Length: 298
Ligand SMILES: C[S@@+](CC[C@H](N)C(=O)[O-])C[C@H]1O[C@@H](n2cnc3c(N)ncnc32)[C@H](O)[C@@H]1O
View 1: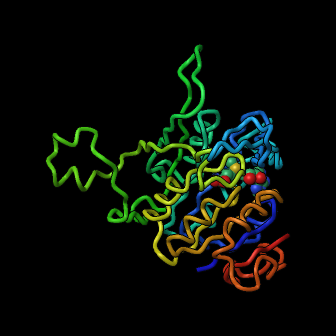
View 2 (view 1 turned 135 degrees about the horizontal axis):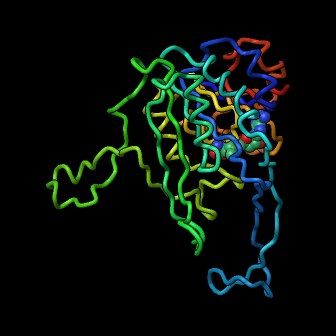
View 3 (view 1 turned 135 degrees about the vertical axis):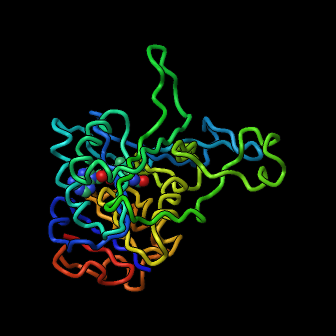
């Protein structure tokens, strides 16, 4: 199993990659929110004057550790996205699947574009990931979901590992009997899952990090062990962790040095001996599956 981190703009390295190299591509591009995506990391230090109360009455003060940010504003969002969507189609193997994770701002335009690239028949599902976190609007229904579009390169033949779908509880378990209730049911195209908790273990501090469980479900069901996965807007490397946990290979591309640093740290248990700096070749100029556990830089 190899995890490869590439520090590059995807438009610079996707064109050099060989056709039909990947079994599953998941991308979660910037959502075009019109404002930079920023996350400030904090830490607490012991301080008798601090504003936080801890164990045994000890007092702590909050200190700002740093801020991570990336731009999220594009005048012509589809023009930004289109070349990489075309590349995704080319890079998929015949039975491969593509997942595009967006929110309500751009997903409808992207759907029309993807229908042209994959063909309308290639569209298999619109998955709604619903969460419940943050404030409520008094002017409209508060948007609390993202949309994940699933396209198959061949709508008659694609990987769908039904037996590997995790089960969710029945809403009315008493109506279905003890055995079924204990087993749970398969999820539909509406997935309920909390966001990455700001205080939880999963948090990397990278803005817009997606929950591992959501991405793991995609990896488990839509790829086979040993398959090759790609995320070319990789951020904190959620796809990489999901791939590593389930015995898949992954290539993770991101233009941001911050993202690459976060990924190196997060994925260090799976990066091979020789570490991050083992490979220095130009992305796309060497065979994709070069070495296990390497980071490549442009
Ligand atoms: C929404 S975040 C991805 C979050 C990721 N799914 C996670 O769970 O952490 C989008 C990422 O796309 C990266 N990005 C934006 N434009 C890019 C480009 N042209 N090439 C590669 N990466 C890019 C940003 O640096 C950012 O890390």
